[in-house]
Amino acid sequence: MLNMKHVASAFCLFVIFQTANAQLGFSHEIGVITGPVQFRSDFGSRADSKTNFGNTGFGIGIVHYLNFAYRADCNCYTTDTYFNDHFKLRNEISWNKTNLDHFGEFVDPNKVSAEADRLRGHKGVAKNLDIGTQLEFYPLSIRSFQSFSYRLAPFVSLGVHYTSFSPEVSTTYQNPNPLLTGNVLEPSNFYSFWDPGSVDASPGSTWSIVSSLGARYKLNKLSDLMLDFRVQYYFNDWVDGLNHQLEFNKKNDWLLWVNVGYIFYLN
Image 1 (tube, rainbow, N blue to C red):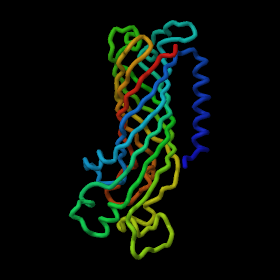
Image 2: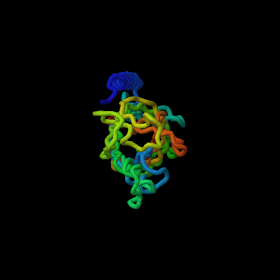
Image 3: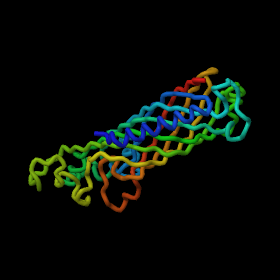
Image 4: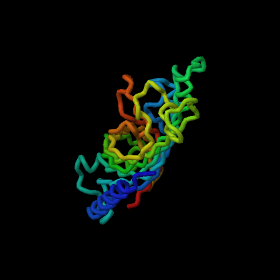
C-alpha cells in the first residue's frame, strides 16, 4: 500500500504552489511522459550488464511547466531577462514499476548451492509514486525556439522529488528447516550472508534528487516532442525492499529513466 497520508499532503502543497504561480500570469504547458526505467538497487551484482538490463521496468507521468518567457494574461512576452529566456519550472507527478531479480556470478547456472538457490528464488517489485519540481535550463533562447528560429532546444535540469514507495517481496525457495512457521518473509528462505532484517517490504516515503539531460523538438506553435534522460537518487536504501549490509552495498537505491513526452502549450 502507498503511504497515502504523505502523498495527499504533498499533492495539496503541489496544488497550492501551482495556484499561487498561476496568479503571476506566466504561461503554462502540460504534457505526458513515458519510457523504460533501469532500477539500480541491491538486487543482482553491481555494474553487471545483465543486472542493469534485466531489472528494467517502465514509468509514466504528467508534467506541468511554467514558461517565464510569455505571459498568459496579456498574450505577450515578459520582460526580456536571462532567467525568463533560459529557464522553465517543471512540476511532475509520475509513477514507475520494475520487477527485480538477481543476476550475475552468484546465480550462474553452475552454482548448485543452497545459497545460490535462495538468490535465484528471491524476487522483488519496486513501485514508486513521485511528486516534485525541477528547474530546467535551456542554453538557447526560449523565445527564439518558440518563434521557430530553430526546432531543437536542449536542456539540463535539477530538482527534488518526494517519493512514496511500496515494494513487494517474494521467494520460491522453501527452507526444509524453517525458523518460523507461516511467515511470508521467513528469514531462512533468503540469502544467509545478509544481516537479519535485510528483506523488508514495508511501504515508506523518502526524498530524492533528480537530474535530467534532454531536448525538445518543436512540432508546431502549440506542441513539442521531448526526449529526457533522467538520473534519480533516493535518500533511502529500502525503496526496493532489500537493504543488505555487504561491503559492495555502497549506495542507496537509484534509477535511470529514458522517457519521451508530448508537451502542449496551454497559453
